[in-house]
Image 1 (cartoon, one colour):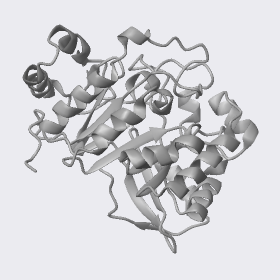
Image 2 (cartoon, rainbow, N blue to C red; image 1 turned 180 degrees about the vertical axis):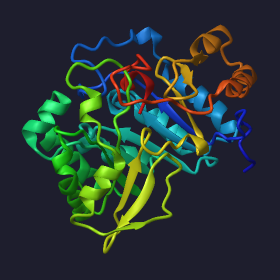
Image 3 (cartoon, rainbow, N blue to C red; image 1 turned 60 degrees about the vertical axis):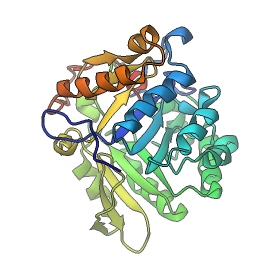
Length: 331
């Protein structure tokens, strides 16, 4: 397959698309959205056909990896039909989903049958009351059941994602790693990103760096630097004596912008060139004004890449640089 035709001004080739299929979610995680979140009207959300048209254009321009995100993607009606179409595309090296796991007890085998190869499952606590506090939903048992259902379904890899915050769940770092090791899963620890205004905590106080998380893990496990990669921003270490890879996503403490290979499309059809910037291209209006015009869409994507910024400027203080919540952007 030829190299990606999507090249930004800094010579970075875009081969990875994160495609949001909904802004809705059955959780209300405190770092992701507000308790009384107002979702976009359904008419403003891309149809399944429009989502496929976007993905098709990116694939034709050299994108090799697609991660389907939300909100919570598994609450989107008709999603398996879209996944089956994407899963049939031989040009793709990887089709993955990021999910909170709540729907996996029933949908895990459906996703695998559709061609999804990898899952990322959010899990920030193994304590029921704390899980309910962080997600605003008492559904830990259902998520754990979903993780076990995914293990049985036979995905290539399953990875847990944990956002660690001081004073809120940093005492569970080692427990989360042990949980992953016992089940043969990978796990990534994520520094909280300053997206949207939150009222549940002060980010400057709760910020926990990847280095601090790694020190907590090394109390109980030897970590060996790993060459493992999934095409995303994680830097990986292997837990000695196991197959578990521990990743660190460090937008603050270890900027990963230099090798950025990805863009995002929101559920409303906005092409987000950088998670840390507000600017976006309205693909939905273009597609609805010129329905079926694949070449116009392709050219718009190529042109937009010339506006991709060199890097984000995330800070850990209380100044919110991007007002949209993560759920509006796609994980």
